[in-house]
Length: 332
Image (cartoon, rainbow, N blue to C red; front, side, top):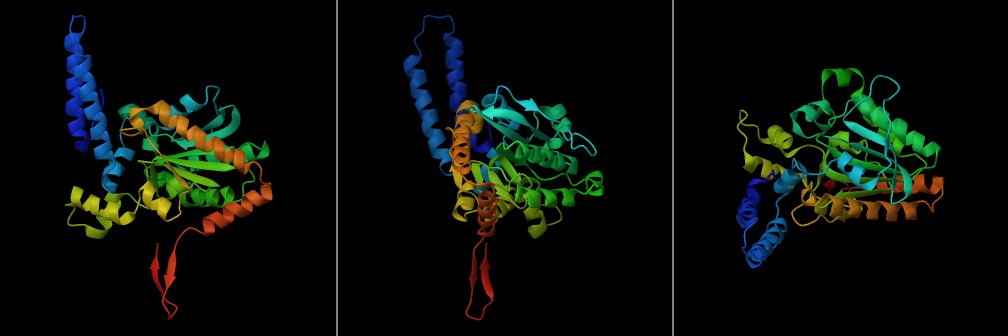
């Protein structure tokens, strides 16, 4: 059964009518072609109208959509011969991060990404896509393996953030993330990262130090969730509502368009009508096109040039404006 967000209710009503018409005509000599085509056009027009005027908070809702494709969905579509690799060789195999060898359009590469899980049982199994330090150490081990065999790396970012539990902190959550940032910045093989859903805080950036960073059109990427931001800034005895989350999402500038404008990402990957959850295959194909194009460009560079340009790319992120007195007035 398809899940609809609140602002998608007009679409739900029309699609329910289409389903009813098809069900009523099933096995009967009734021609409903003209009527269904008319309704399908209305659905398409509604999609265009609604999805071209989404607020940052609505985009956050789409990025979290329960039907949105996750890392394993993309791997299944992009790489038929994927071989998953397990464990960090120190403590455990963190199931919130998937990694292994595969081919994207016949190009061998290492594929790594967050995995949230569907349904209560699988979400608990995957820890809701929130990795422990073991997951980040596993990811780095696989990146180092890719470097050794001169394989490009493709990462999928989709997490509300790194797991903040006591066990994770005891095993060095902050250190694991910091080590990934440092080591990814100097890995001598091409890295392409794609934000496919939520890009939350250090838990996201630990897989995002790349030569090319892309975002799907309706994904988000920020230092904190709108709910967390609202709770810190406007906490009123826990009485927070959608209007506070709207305000926080707007202030965080977390949409793909915002981050492209700030030059944090390199490009926005368009999604099909109604979002990636409406058409997995088309979305996967577009990601593959962007990844392969980037890998083809990056593999012409020497390892030293690759690392140098990655460093410069990271250093350029952010805009600062100074007054005549030398004091910073604005920083993004």
